[in-house]
Length: 381
Image (cartoon, rainbow, N blue to C red; front, side, top):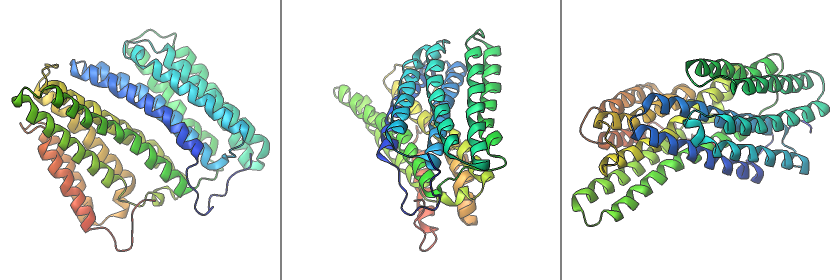
């Protein structure tokens, strides 16, 4: 398991990586669905907290595999087998999402540990072939990950409540500190175009949840064919969801992402900040489902609260991608339009327009980005 060449031409995601992503479609969908149910019933604090905790496990497991693969992907039988074991852990985690929203994290933690133990074996295998500082970094990864898994086992012994939440935050901070601990002296080689392609693929996964929500609006509209008063709003929300989702896609892939990871510090910023981008994109679909519940009288939360379940995720997505990749590759006009757009999206939550103004704002941002696209720059790879 020798390190890959970080300057290899035409490096692209492998079929194994694409196969690996499929189980995360299941996990993200499960977390988004449970967030939708919690928000729709007005259980905001517990729902958002549970979602944030579970999405951390999903995101961190995916991200660790992605950065390891860019450095040491051998695609031999043992590497494939270990990866499939990790996929099994993701499915166990996904199966435990409903229980976790009820306060029982046993199954998600078991699935998470399965993923992480498989990752430990990958790093130990890499350490056998690596030499010098690179071997030290691989061993540090293995030791660091193993240590944190002991903490997650202890997490199950903590009763549900504020103490458990505090423990989660502390353990999560230790978990994300492992790469810093492992690589602060010598970094593993990463392929910038390959990494940003992988992040783009995961973005498509989370945005796909919103397209599903748009389709669900059509399905509910078909069920309401005899009620003309309910039909028009459902069709409108479906169309607006498609417009907003397409705009999010356009905005995300506008900047050249590979320029955002030119150093170890910048790669950490890029990788860690994507938690908010991914979580927000998946939460947007939950917000659309809440809007559908409002239109079909299945939810009785206030219109403003329902609108915020859509506006806040969109605003977080825009702020995140602006901070990660757009800000350093845009002129003053774009860097002014993005924050203004965020403010207008949040303002829409307090107006009786559903997400109509938000859709217009998103289209306006896209128009500006197309207008200000640097000549000869085709955006992210």
